[in-house]
Image (cartoon, rainbow, N blue to C red; front, side, top):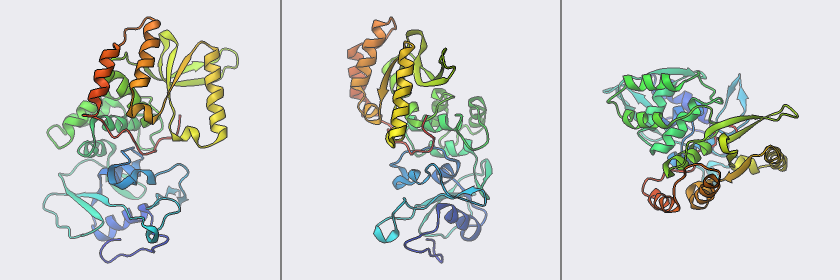
Length: 327
């Protein structure tokens, strides 16, 4: 695991235990940072980053002494079958000595805001966002911010204005410029990274901005429904379907019943998937036709074509770890 520390091959130490040993035994005084801190906070980051470590945090994690235990390898895997332990990140003040060797990336950064998270000292949410901004494309940083200011974040409550102020105090530090740009595109009330990326694709292509998770109340049953991305003035919505929407028949039936109910009240709902976001031409052209027919100003097919052609040059990861519950 670390020099001087070993772990069983078939039941390796959890990510949580590895974090505690690193901070309390291997490098006392180190602050867990970057993707390691993001994982402990539940802040989403791309699957491709850190060999898929973002997928280690799944719903319904085991709990020990009231604390969620994050595993170190995927369910059903073992080190014997080729799984690898994750690399952890921490930060120390410049000039501090650290002879860890394998298993750890040590960042010698100036002291930044910290917070307690399940008996661990980690970078604060705003500091984690700045750290992630040194590692990720702009749109992925926006999705991470949306999660932090969203209703499902399990850390201390954050607001967009507060994050802007905190980043302003870190101006000139690594990642702060990209984080500032991302904050300008972040929105509250977003329930999943897929919704964030869908919205960003639509805006970059020239579509009018939708409302995030618009509340719609059934006048007959009084039941509340929410539409991921909605243009209320024309009764049009986009629903992002992540993998969580296809895991069980019950979830599929619930989604279909919800769509039928909204359709009965005049809503037209368009589905979007991860594949649509990677290759958005079909989705954008369909939305352009529907919105144009209903009187909204929309990008021309030619503009959509140019946008799609240029998307590959600045494409974000388009695949975010599943940290937030499905909407």
